Image (tube, rainbow, N blue to C red):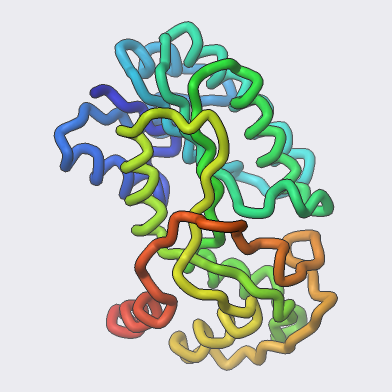
Length: 251
């Protein structure tokens, strides 16, 4: 089976490509540095020739509200058009758990817009909404830092390892389209403040984490339901402590 992975050279994309190639599939990692640009459309039609499955894992280069909305709307429209012409039989996209519950976040509004373009395309599809990746904890700490102190909400998350995300994406790629949304999360609930506090401890980072229920997470306030999945999500097996232990071992 030929599978095209948009964003195939990124964090999740490289893992998905390796996973699917290991199972004998013809996989094309597509990104601007491989000559495929979803914003301009350059190389897109050529990459999709003969493909049965399209996986969109690309992310916006800027998280500014207008930029991220333009990215996902433009790329989404170009992908849907090219996928229809190519006769794609399964269009898969990675989105975010809770994206439709947090309209104050420009990034999540853009992810909802991307999802709607896929649904409206008429192409058989599966939208995988994932919780936050362990690998993004450093960025969360940076975003919450004010004058050397990290201000974060205690709201619960159910974060997940990138390896576990990639494993499910690869599984879905060879399954029948769900024609809807499936959710993916890690195995445990963790407060956002504690998530970062434990990471900084492992990294021997002296920044103090201050718990603040009104602290904004990329533009929006959180509660325990904001970024946690609904009933019966797919669960990745890797615990946060297991992942932290690997970070410590590789330090």
